[in-house]
Each structure stands twice: as structure tokens, then as C-alpha cells.
Length: 324
Image (cartoon, rainbow, N blue to C red; front, side, top):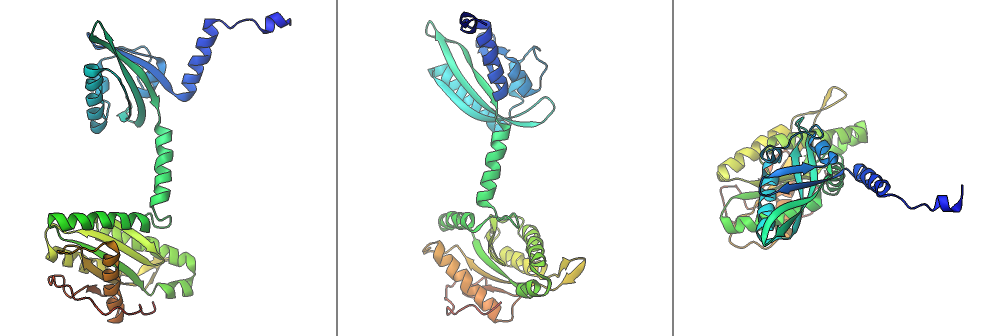
């Protein structure tokens, strides 16, 4: 083969083929909408994204219906803005395909004005479902306890600060509960760490059931859990929820089909009061109440300052926590 043949210029068709192949690998398609008729023009990748037959007739109202409600509202608002003012936007939108599968799409759009009037909008649509799934996995790894699937300590403390500040403003009744398992060390010592891990997983499921309307439930470390609650119906409901949780958590767990005794001590502090001094104070109060629960016989609920109905804040004497 001659040097001249090797260096023969590529045709426009070659470049278009390479370009189309790259778009196909990236799952990117182009689209256009003519504003006077709302006629849509899609490339094959967009048809594939929506799982519609390639080249089929498109009706804009039908394709818009395939957006999830929040994504549709955002898209319509951004679309109206660029039609009115010009410019472009990028939006990650969630859609339902023709087979009712859920997908994420990165939508880019730009408006074209001719003779001072908007005439068309065009852009690209890319399937980013896999990218979203990867980011969701990374977020879960960063925010969840790997053993139980509950929130981790960092997430819990952030949510606690948010709710405490809101409770100080809106007058709602909210509470922070710290839960420490009674007898967990004996399970580890007698049956091994696999049994301990299974115990923690079962307790996590019970917490989800007992506090089904909690703001957040977390494993703080070891056999200690925390629950952040909002009680819009008041202290009576809160007291009922906590007692029910104590009974549920105190039922034996199963290890290799055999029941194993377990219990739970719960320390609680209310978030609503005139002078909120920060999240560290809340944890100190709940931890002091938890100590008193342990010291008074375990498997009980102890509220900082006395009964839940008593709003006075008399701080218990801070002592070292007794052995578990």
C-alpha cells in the first residue's frame, strides 16, 4: 500500500459513522422540537432511551407524560424560560420508558430565535441510569452502616442538629433516644461474632418497625443505636412509642433457630425547650438518661429530667456508664 493511499482523506460519511458510533456507545441522542408545530425529531438513540420503535411518529404530549412528575415540572419550567429569554439548560430527569422501566436521562436544551422570535429548541438526551446507580451506591456507602443498613453516626448527628433547630422554632415535640443492648456481650462471648452480627441485624429490623415514622434511625457503633423522633401528637404518643419499642426490642433474637435472650435500655431527651444549646448537649442528656436506665435494672426507658410529661430540665448527675 502506498503512502498516498494511507493518507487518503476521510470522507464526510466516515466522520459521521465514527461520530454516530461514539454517540451510540455513550448512549447519547440528538433531538429537536419546532415550536410552531411542536413537531419532534429524534435520532435513534433517543428512541432507544424511551423504548419506542425507531422512526415512529412522536407526539410531544405523550413523551412529556413519560417524565416523573417532579422531573416534568422542572423540565417545563426550564423550557419555558429558554423559549422566553433564550439560553440553554441541562437537567437530569427521571422518565418511564414505554415498557414502564425507570431510567435517568441527562437532557440538554438550547433555544433558537429567528427574527426576534423563538423558532425551535434542540439538544441531546443521554441515558445516565448506570451513572446514577453508581452514585447512589457511593452515597449509601458514605451514609449507611454496612452491617445493618441503618444510617451511620455522621448522618445522624447532622439530622439531629437540623431537627433540633426546627423544633426550637416550630413548637413541635421531638426526642432523641439512645438505645444500648442488654446482654449483647454475652451473645458474642457465647456464640461468636457471627451471632452478634445477626443479632444487630435483627435489632435493626425491629427498630424500623417500632419507629416506623422516625426522622432517622442509626447505628452509632457497637451495640448502640439512636433514633430521632418527631411526635406531632404530643408527649403521650411519644411515651407510648418508646414503651412499645422497649417491649419489641426485649424479645429474644433467633440464632440458628434457637431463641437467645436480649434486652434494650433506652435513654431519651426532649428537643423542645426555650434554650437549645446544641447537639452535643442533647447527646450528653440522652447518654445520662441511658446511664440511669442501665443503673436502674436495665431493659427500661429513662427520660432526662424525669417523666416525658414533665418538661423541667433537672440534669442527672453525670457518672461513668456501668459495664454492659
